[in-house]
Length: 214
Image (cartoon, rainbow, N blue to C red; front, top):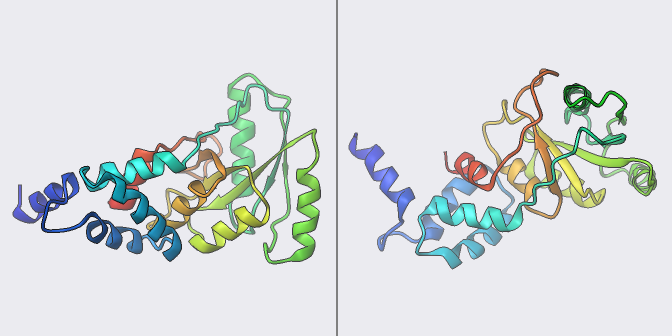
């Protein structure tokens, strides 16, 4: 094994006395452009796992913050998708219909809303009224390609309880993904392909930690 690769592997396994967990983890989080405030939260929470390697410490932080809530596509009746323009709502709608049919459920209705500007007061009011309806579930769609702070603002503005994150196949930095899934909204699914017949997928804390440390 080349010396540099071996040294990196040892660092991830255990930071050691010569480098703090904060000093080792900060560059990776900054590279993925997480919001500064969220970086500080991650670092503070990771400090409770100083005896762990960087990957294990970050995995534990993510595990405490992520909540998986996949859709039951065999029984969902009506789903309303909302998300910013370009987030991939149409792609998600096609996947939902396809996966529901694969599960033997051909009666599910997926409503794809128009894209919106989350800073628009009228949009916030209109979508807030829709979310209050009891005959459908509102699912937020956000993109891993978006700005992490804007993703956080969208989830907070529309009080999204469950989200689908798109674009993992195209993203090279995963700050938006980390911001989306660690600040209160439950993660239903992620997408790693725009093809309608490519299934909606799950994402574990370990997988996200690996993406952030890659």
